[in-house]
Length: 72
Image (cartoon, rainbow, N blue to C red; front, top):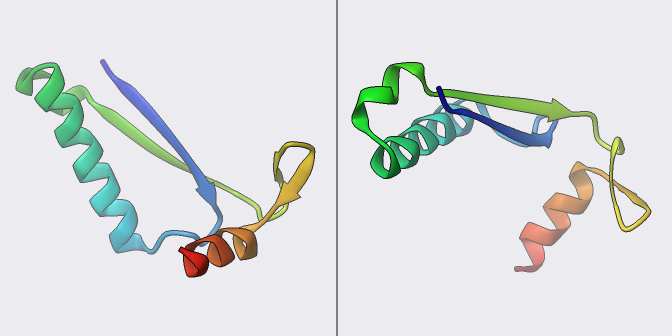
C-alpha cells in the first residue's frame, strides 16, 4: 500500500487545498501504478510549526514561504 507524506508549515494550506492535494496525489499514484490500489493509498499531510524547519542552517517559517510566493 502506498504511503505519501507531505510536510508543510502549519496553516500553509486551507482545508480545501489539503483535500485537493490528497485527491491529486492519489490520482498520480493510481495512474502510475494501478487503479486497484486507490482504496489503500494513504496521503498524510504533516504540519510543521513555523520556524521549526531549516534549510542550509537557517530556520524558515511560513513568512518565508509567503515571500517566496509573492516574489515569483
